[in-house]
Image (tube, rainbow, N blue to C red; front, side, top):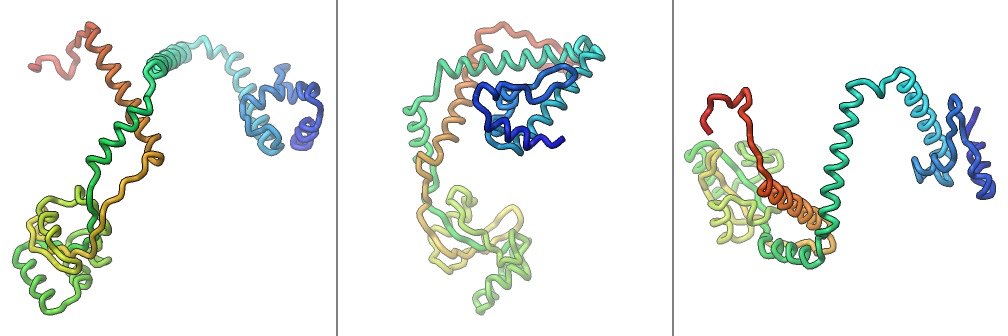
Length: 261
């Protein structure tokens, strides 16, 4: 039997008629109100309503079978039920605390101001050649002075990022650039190459392709993220307060017995 036409017809009936049953599963009634409660998107959408109804039928069948087999009395189910109850209570406790201590607009604005103060001031567009030895680096510098193309040398010799792209690193904020490299590129002009500079992988030659002021996203764009961070901070502080007020004794476990703290 196709259910979509039936559900479409039901959607055209008066409100009193919408209380009619949509299905009966071994005597268990499924109503339109239950369907909408399960999936509000089903209201006025026959295709979604049909899919949701089939899901409710499947759930009813599985629940009936579970009760028939007495699974709700099993030790596993009782333990899972207890765990879920604990989880719900824990979430409720945190929600209750945060409702009493909401993140204020003032707190969000203050966090944003801190973000602005610590945000990078400049961005540099760079490309880089990294070679393992100083002798290799000197040869690269000589080739560059003789007019060899930086990108071709990077593709041929670099052991750093993106050699096939000429060692292109894209735009990097100043706080993303290692201090020894940053100190030299700050004094360089666009197109200029600095190096060799010692780096963990060997020696780097860096070409500055451009420089621009770093931009900071507006408060309206990051407010949701900042509020989430502040809620996490409040939660951590609340838990720390509870721990400081509690008497907590750590018992030795199998992995720590005999070990000194």
